Image (cartoon, rainbow, N blue to C red):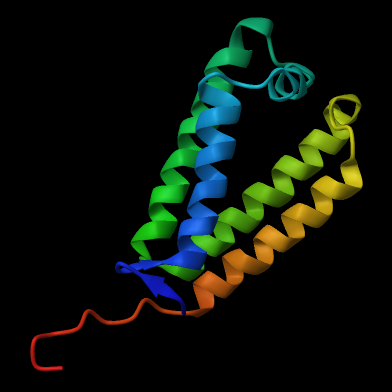
Length: 132
């Protein structure tokens, strides 16, 4: 695993994706297409769109932190896989008009999931001691 300054680069890349998707796309400043996709969910009242976007965004940021810790990496990979598949399915079912290139979305998310599972399959290296 490539390491730089004690941070595993593949894990940092995965975390950055979650932070971008969570914080930038949903919390601040937020993207209109994300809002429209959530607003298109059936039975979701209009007042619930912003709180739901904030909750999803903050959960994605927390997921990025979890990935960086390296703890329970396989459980983190399962959670990420479920979320990516769920978000893609929901977006394609209820917000397809707001997704300009659905094929690109799916291909990029498959690449992300490959990286997620690569990170999960590689345990973090043990910290080096002064003796070794």
